[in-house]
Amino acid sequence: MSLERVDGVAPIEILLVEDSPGDVRLTQVALRDAKMRNELHVASDGIEATRFLRREGKHADAPRPDLILLDLNLPKKSGREVLEEIKRDPKLKTIPVVILTTSAAEEDVLRSYQLHANCYITKPVDFDQFIKVVKNIDNFWLAIVNLPPFAKAQLTAAE
Image (cartoon, rainbow, N blue to C red):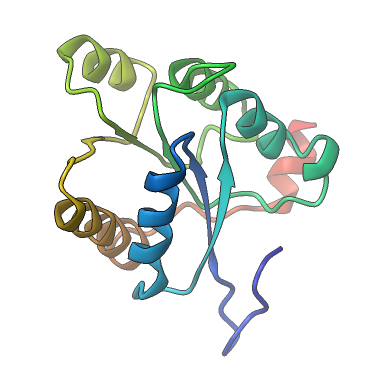
């Protein structure tokens, strides 16, 4: 459920697609003191992520994310498949997708950018470095970058 607007500003909606409970907890800790108010939603596999984005089933009232943090190595449906679906969908393709994964393989980096990922970050294994990376994502994507506005008219027109 989304946080209410404070001072007329809605929180930034973030969808974290991650199957590791430890990495989910670390991301929650790192974003807790974020510069911008945010609401973190978690999908633990590729199918749940797709259902969240399409507002299906228990996600019928899910907000449209302003930013997606996507792991590549997911159960049920890979992050690559999720990324491809997002970037092919006219209603979703403008949502920035940050790949946050353990893989540093060149083919994963190349394929992610070919599928129009907005950024590719290899997860550090060190706790402090992981927190630092997520805080840098927060600083860049939520405080510096102008995220694309979501126009309800565009959504209606695409339906």
